Amino acid sequence: KLIAYHWENGVGRTSTPAGHWVNIARQLLEQQNRNLAECAKTYCLVGFAAADGFSACWFVKYKYFLLRPVTYIRENIDPTWAPLLNTPPYPDYSSGSSIMGGAGSTVLISIFGDNVTFTDRTHLGSPLYTPDGGPFVLPERTFYSLTQAGEDAMASRVIGGVHFRRACEEGLKSGRCIANTILARTDFGF
Image 1 (cartoon, rainbow, N blue to C red):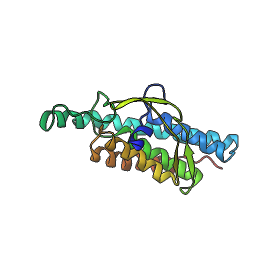
Image 2: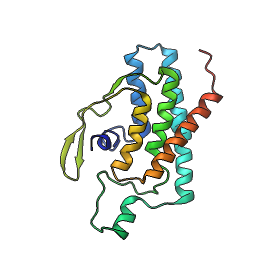
Image 3: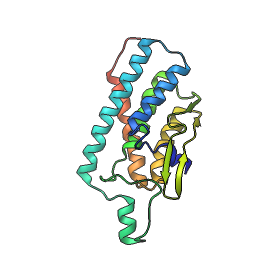
Image 4: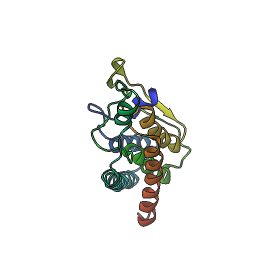
């Protein structure tokens, strides 16, 4: 549950997966006391990753128009089933959170390296109202690599019951591919 809740970027928090990764970038930049040029480059790359990642995500969502787990499970298995997290009102495939997990982590790896330990305080102390009560006050979460953080973001959507595993795994791969394309086509000269 902690994984699902940590990456639930709803109202009163970052509101989007992209906002969460921008905040992770901010935390890393501050942690390493990076200069203005490095900050500008980092925010630019995370922004490119978010823009291209979500463009690809939303294109395939409405190209394939696949059911969410809640719809399938209620129609075929248990009409009373409820996911751990709120399910958004748009198609399952592919997962935007997973695309950002792949794209965000990949561009940040290009700047900070993968084996950077950081504590994500993005939602620290933020209340989350859950089906089993609330509010649940969100804690910080420590990661030992950016790859771990990206994969955690992907897993959160399966654990939370909002996406099927394939939507998340393919989203993570797509995000990484998008980020690598951005990195190959940009040269900031420093």
